Image (cartoon, rainbow, N blue to C red; front, side, top):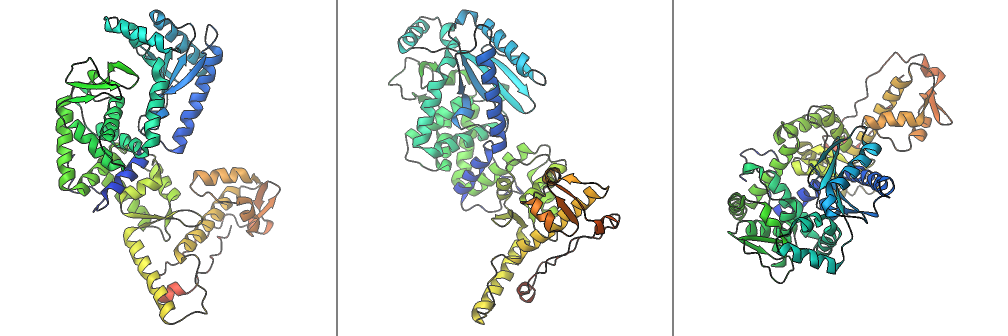
Length: 511
């Protein structure tokens, strides 16, 4: 992965391992995605347990990367396994027909369905789910199934592979509980795989990647996600592989062996053939990390963001946000930036606060009432001003002047936001009548103007009268709704003298 000449992401990375950890955090599903996935899983589970022909599924288990905490925010799906008591691997297609009919009747209004040999796939917008069939398998039963597979009868073992999902998830979760950063390394490795074009569309599976990462960890004392990710690249760069996943030995003699931890006859590596390409890509990036880890990380972040905002580039996104921030009299909130990007042709920002940090040209600091974002040049100028103010106060012993709790910049932003809220509510009410306060709040939220304690705020404004849970224009202001005054501009302090003068609270626009 070569570093681009003008990456537009991170100019200098001396702490590249910390930036890779931030990238791993950003790549995971956000709270909204997790909520949607959990809601869908709950609905489908209920349908399978109560509506399936023949009495319903005895239980439904979570499987796959979402259950293990290694899903990527881009293109992840939820895997469920319906455990049935009358399972017969010879009639697996009939079970899948039954599952698909159940899902169509309960959740098929807007969903699309497809099938693989072992699963029913449901697609609804950006959400994807795979539903497989399994059953409870006792240890002695599984021993008989594997012995039959050793004799060449592999159909029964393959049909029962989904039945082992709970054991696979438990095995991986136990490792991540002991080595928490290994999970983040898996996320980085899967993202690294996704950024490359694989010949014949044959790329390493997520389970193969995961087992190779865990095996790399077992041979080292590495603790940081970046270090474990580098160990994965070293294993991928090797000419042959023998990953036994806790099994004492194996009868498989292939040059590439990566065993399923709960099924020693399942060589996960057998389904992947582009080992030469994997080796070449890993060797190239290992060389770059060794020579210039910061350049590799900058390129890695840049290519990741590019992949999320195609056909736009990271540089285009960065320039757009900087132009929006520079055009404002006050610093934009994270919500403001996210709304501006969503309203453009760039699309929705995933985890906007983390993305702004990854872009490198912004500072996201905790403030009230929201996080504020400042362009790098403005930030440097303002910090210098505040440092001068503090120096003057210290050296001239201005002890009588109370030290400001909040800097003028967030205060100005709060005042500007209140003015925008008043102006918007005036526009909303100018046609007369009253509106529910909750409805006003919904309109504000959709425009990135969420206002805590909205009803109390409106009641304190002379322009409005709040009665119960409704708000209307005051009698004195209703007649002037067609006259709109421009929003007041509160100057950003640029000198020590200006910064020392308290900023006046701007009066709201006349309605």
